[in-house]
Length: 371
Ligand SMILES: *Cc1c(COP(=O)(O)O)cnc(C)c1O
Image (tube, rainbow, N blue to C red):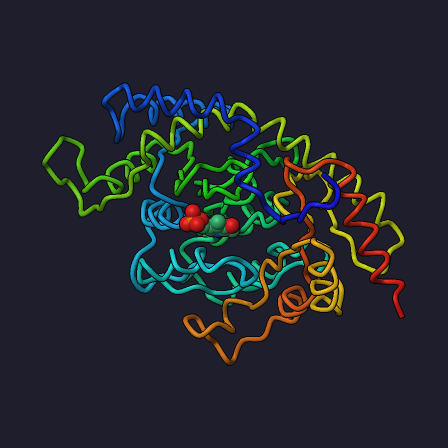
């Protein structure tokens, strides 16, 4: 497939790889007569919780809702502060703002580009109890420094919600990402490592009270049908999407193994090339949602690759505090700014093979050695 256009993510290939299984899962739902909160959702929630070694999974309509409802269940509300990073998708902060809370942006570690625990410690000390929750983002499928982040949060009385939208299956210090904090929020957007054929999300937690609260919030605050115990909303996962996700969950381990194989090949092929390669934190086993290299001439590399049928991505080009909706002109986080200016995500997904990686690596090296 080597002269085809290569994409950073390819949901169609993810469907095609398991098309027969997915079609039969969909047929099963169509024939069942259950389309909302039925047996497929219940089974997926059980299976996804089991993938974490036990706990509770509550599915919701998308990853942003998972973040928002989990934060709400953790006690975050209007006027509270929530510490997170600025090199993430708008969703992370949208969820905070929807609750009437305010984000406090924490600087990243310049090597891993993930939340820096010492910077978090400084923010928590400065805010003196105002920060109710910390949301580390396991960006690119690389788990953040959870042992240190959770310890810092505990010292300052803050809850921890892991943003696992890019880290399905990652581990750190031998434990799954998503099991370190008080809760974890997942997205099943089609391009994620575990993707539906539409929107989907979930909260994972080992705190039964948090799970129960999210379960009420996702459906009008109902414990008993037609009786709202608390003020909730509608944020449900469809049976169809749950059935698709059950198929994809069974293949997640193989998909992540393929991503690791592709990433290892990139690391070998690009060793010595004049781009900065991704750093993996000690004890971390990433799932390579993205393979992100860095160069100060990022836009030139992006254009060069595009001209050769390679569609690299930029996650994310503008820090959240520099975007109109969340602008904070007084804030400057130099490592965050530099990462946003330099990152470029090379194609890495289970639909690719080693020859595709070799082709991308060859073009990166050709670009670097061009006058
Ligand atoms: C995809 C993503 C989300 C949001 O998920 P949606 O399902 O699109 O709402 C949140 N955080 C991160 C880091 C993501 O990558």
